Image (cartoon, rainbow, N blue to C red; front, side, top):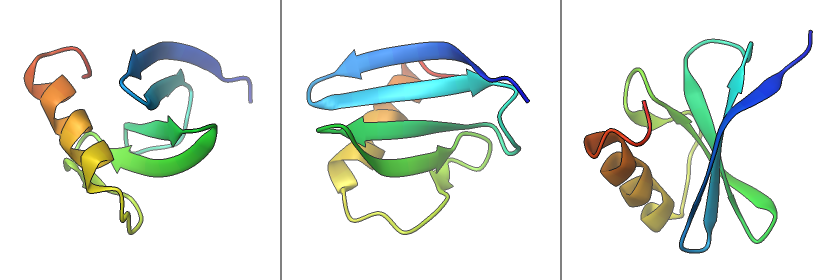
Length: 70
């Protein structure tokens, strides 16, 4: 399977990435300092795994509300 980046958003100290052809559910990967800090389910609007970085979750919700991240 070949994946390609659909979107890469730099916001404050975070990089948010979405991929074409990635597994379901539709989600994004959030990196901080080069480290994956969050995988966020964009269909259910919740983290896919436990996340202690509440700022990352808040940023994803803001970007979805603004229509920047779908």
